Image (cartoon, rainbow over all chains, first blue to last red; front, side, top):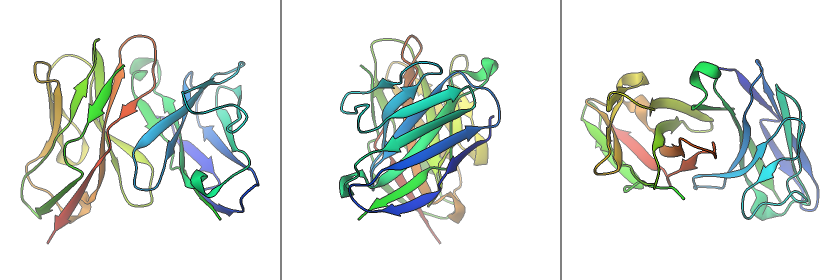
Length: 116
Length: 114
């Protein structure tokens, strides 16, 4: 499976500021996703990052709050804008497997965000 | 739309005992099923998956799961657990057409005691 890295691994931010999270994959992948895991909760899909076009957002998530970039097949960013304490979560990037395993998703290590 | 129910939020078990973590799903179309494990302060690691074929699937770390279509279940089992298996376990489902994102259950905390 692909090796996925995320930066930063964790951060503490002040309310009202923005943080950009990077996701880097060691091979080209078609599908990239961003999930949120709020404290003690399961994972919720934020959006699908589409290469060369706008991301597809899930209900309850909007581009102004979570702008996403996908400039190529190995990299994506998620920005958490105008943060509030409710944005404190783990943010995880995931990618689809190779052509022989594209039904499976593999996850990065996550970015742990605390908003004060 | 599909959904996933993990019936137990916490499962305490003694070391070397067997364990079963339950997962039921709901979907009007065929699905792919997954179990992921999350160790403290880490991301998600794929344990095993059911895509098609044999309904009994074996994964890493001695875990296995059985797909039961009639009962819409995908329970995870291990015959003998270790302290190192203490973690959060998530069941997830994906439909086999169109939308490729995963829908996750609420998670089960497996607590292995000495």
